[in-house]
Length: 371
Image 1: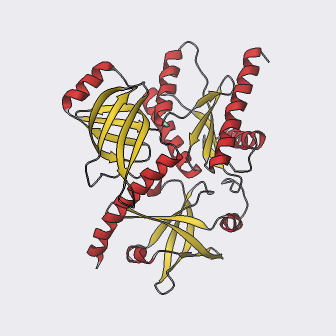
Image 2: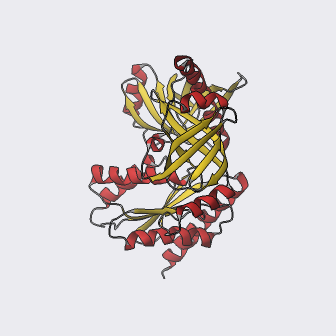
Image 3: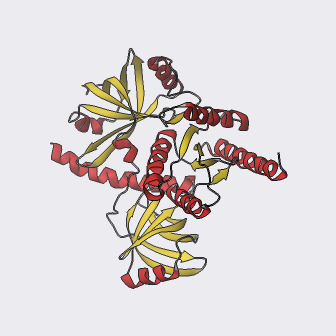
């Protein structure tokens, strides 16, 4: 092993262990992705462009070279079901844009009990399974759930639900996500009883099924709505199906503010542009500014520069909370600047709270339509 390889191995170990330590302190999660790509040294510009695209597409997630042909990506604050959908789409985009196949992909979610060895062994297991597969699938799983295990799925689910009884239920009504965090009341013989919020009952009564999302399960589960107990606020679900894709995998919810949110885009202490946020999600913002400002920004070619965006966001107590986010320009279209943002755990909580408030207001209006 060369000195360069030894240094790189310790560099990777240091970064992996740092991510594990931070996740334990903050009780946060990350997904670790390992993929293979054989670099053509005679066409390194294509490789450079692809890595640049991957870096932006994954919201500026760290990419490490593990050996000559394999790479690691850290997807922070990203549970495994979302990671799998993201990497699957990334693979398709790389094929479409660069005619490049990202081969042999393994993904795992960190555990609060992970060490460097257990985490790396787990992602290596899925990576090797992908290499041995003839169908070029993405292989993935967690400490608790191996999707390709031959173990009975009911026993796997029982183990997971015993560990954590909290799930997310997801539906769409007139294009608006109907989401709630619920608790599993019981699980027997493939039938789940779930305790729900009373104000969501009218929506479930309009549906024949719902989508279940659990932090420890790689895939989305589709379940039929068998019965609703209005007196006990219980929804009974059966016919559980693990899905490769579902509406939930597109549920990086983006909302349009009901009031103007003024924002300023800066580089260091220099103001670049200011205008109103016209849409916001956990990882991106659309900022509408005067057209002359976008012309100036396009001319400066700031697409790979670290910038900041500052604005005030309302919370559930009707106070305005200041937010300053690290951001990069993803695209400029006419008078709109599309920005990738990198919020920390506290900032994500503020954004999620604001999105939830906006959705609740929309749902109140929709409930009136259901009466």
